[in-house]
Length: 369
Image (cartoon, rainbow, N blue to C red):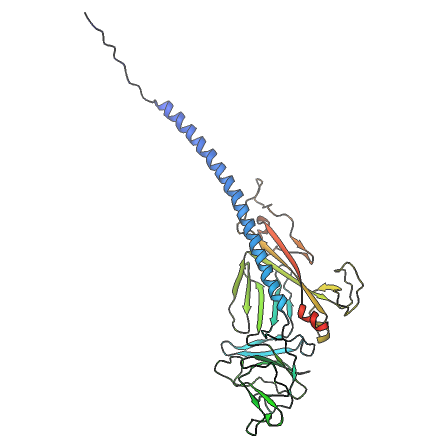
């Protein structure tokens, strides 16, 4: 009996089948990458918006906390507005500045304002004490009738109408003794400010101002603060100008800062919607950038309102076929007007968040009360 054996031939993929499979795989990869790109775009937008939210909120929080302390230690109309001459052994002469709770330095239309915020660190609010006798030189101690609250290491501000204010640091207090240096022999106590050692605010060459019995001393505590906030390279920065010249970064992606004074000056300039627009009644009448020129005008400063613009970290692509961005087509606004962001030619490629707050200058308000 014969058996017939049927041979089967093994067959693989042909070139046509392989090419079809490759085309299908490539199409699938294209779809996958497109979906991934869209997903990443949405994710980047969401994360950038979250970062802008956090940076802006933190910036306003820091500024608000600083402004709440503004004016502590010198909230008295006798000294407000004077030019302060200061010295620190670590940096030398400090650039002269205006003694005020907050000073707004108005920037250009396309730039940011800067804020100078000043306050002391005294644990108790000590009333200014009169200088009891004329000084002979700017190196002399301060003879005072009442040294209560003035402690070793405290920084004092000397002020007198018509003269610059100066900072000094208490190195010791001398009671009335026959050996006390002039002019301290004629009064009960003397606040001494010797240069060197752990007392950096005492200038070895003297303050440059000689005070008479018409002057006053203010106790600012051991570590007074003068912080200067500004926007540099899309970052909110601060310089602690009494102790350092170095910029310190507060928050990233802050592109603009604007600020205005709230005056109780009886002026209706349209920035406050309702009256009665009566000067010195404890109610803000107007907002502007006009820096007070006198102590009385500084005493009418009740609030400061600030606006901060935070930006997304990454630019976004145009939604249409053209090259022009349209992520943001209208400049952001605040109560003080519109922010002009045109200094950056690509400003419309970003998303923005605006943060605004009005902060009472409570140390001025308490003085009035």
